[in-house]
Structure formats: structure tokens, C-alpha cells
Image (cartoon, rainbow, N blue to C red; front, side):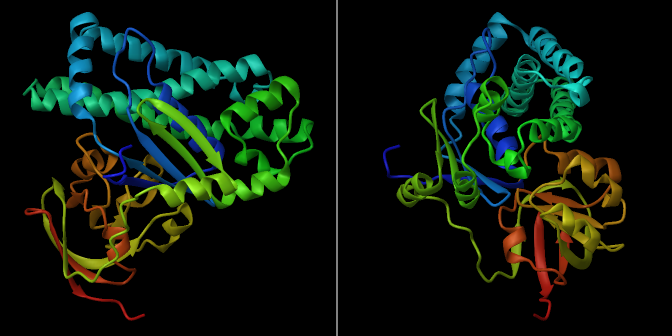
Length: 352
């Protein structure tokens, strides 16, 4: 980059390094021809089970040109057919995850998984493109289903992979440090029995960086990652005193209530009936408690995000894309959610 701009914060997620490596490579490699859309830049900063993702620019102008070309050469129905092929292959390979043992079987699954992640980015961009072109809502609704399908598959197959990882640990005399391997290192372990030094794995848990810049990617671990991070200009976390936050209305309504912050899965147990959920983004595995909350506020959000669709289904007031709700608000704060106008007003701060 030219050094004049900064990396813009998008999302923060709980994940293992191995999972983040696979997702990043899916975004970097994107979809094979005849698709022409590519991701130009992306940055992931990983630290002890948490990953923060940044972009340098949305690069939507070049993506728009590529999407127009895809429409000319593939067409909307053709795009959907190719999505179906990816999901069919992923579904087929996922049936045998509990007995997955060979390098070849892993590589087949890995390819399908990465492409399903690429579909998530593609549908997000395509929905934005169609909305700006004032296309029919029916096409956007179709994309919503594929977006949700890709997200759900990513979650479900990762859970189903646990027996495979346990098998790999057992035959290689490894422990859960396996989750600190990159996708390439796991492949090398399966094919050649090559292990990564334990001290190196511990160091990369402190900091790892996945960087896609001008369509070329690099991965940095440990000390090298620290030097790379020092040279980056990252959008600062906006931890400031505020009396209100603003975002985009996903479902209308107005309500006052107590805030509960949910970032990690272990935070789920904090939820009480009537709480206002504050989270980076809702996920399918939250559905067990979402019926209990009274409103949803997220840091992130877009036309196809989970919070937007689930709030409409549950008819819960919802404001997405505040960027800083999880940083400014604290457990126990009392807020008014005005989801008619996209405003969250802090009425009373919790006692520390």
C-alpha cells in the first residue's frame, strides 16, 4: 500500500489459527474461472483465539466491473448452478468427515471448504451490486439463502471435523497445538509427517498476520508478525465516552433495557430474559437464546448479515453496523434502542 491510508476494521471473531488460515485462503484464492471477481486486499490479525479482519478499501468499482462480466458470461442462473456444485461437493465430502484420514481426502474437503468461504464474499458483493442496479428482490433473496447456507456449512463442518483432528493428533503424538498449524502445514503433516516446532506454535498464538495486498498474499508468524504489524496503520478501536451510537436499521422498533455483551461462546450463559444483546455479529449457534432477548445491536452488518435476517424473523428491534457497540457499552448499561431511527442512547452506565 502507499502508506497514506489505513486498514479499516471489519470484524472480530473467535477462531483457531487453523480455521482462520483456511478461511483466509478461501478469500485470497476466491472462486475459479469462469468467475472473475477477486479480493484485492484483506488483513487478519490473530491473537490467542481471536481474529480481527481489516480491509484497505472496499474496491467495489473493480468488483462491479468483474460482476458485470460474470453476468455476461455466466448469468445469474449459471452463477447459482455453480454455487450448487460447490455445495454438493462440500456436502458429499462432509458426510465422511468422521472417517476422514488420508491426505487426498483432506485436500478434497479443503478445496470445497475454501470455495464455500469464497461464495460468502461473492454473494455479499453480488447482493450489493444488484441492489445498486435496482434488481429484483427475488434475486437478492436467493443470494441470502446461499449466504446463510455457506455460513451454516462452515460452522457445521468445523464441528464435524473434530474426530478427524483427534485422529491426526493421535497418530502424530500431538495435542491441541495442531489447531495452531496453517492449512499448508496440516497438509504437509498428513502427506509427509512433518511437524512444526512447539515453541514456534506457541509464539504464533501470540501474534499471526495474514495479509492479502494487491491480490498477493503473505503469512507472518511470531516475531516477523510483530515487525509487520508495527509498520501497519490500523484503524484504532474507538473506545470513547459517548452518550449515543448510530447504525443501520435492520428491523424497526423501540425498547429500553439492560445490555449484555456477547463476544465469546462462554458469554452465552450471561443472557437473561429481556436483555439487549450487544455483539460483533449474531451467528446460527446463538438461536438457542435469541428468542429471550428484546433487541439486537451489532458492530458489523450488511445487506445479507445474519442479524438482519434473524431480527426480521423474530421481530426484534435491531440496529447493525455501529462498529463500536461492543467497545463503548458494558454489561449492565441501560440503553434505549430506537430502531426506527438507528440510534442507541445510553441512559445509565453500569457501576464498575
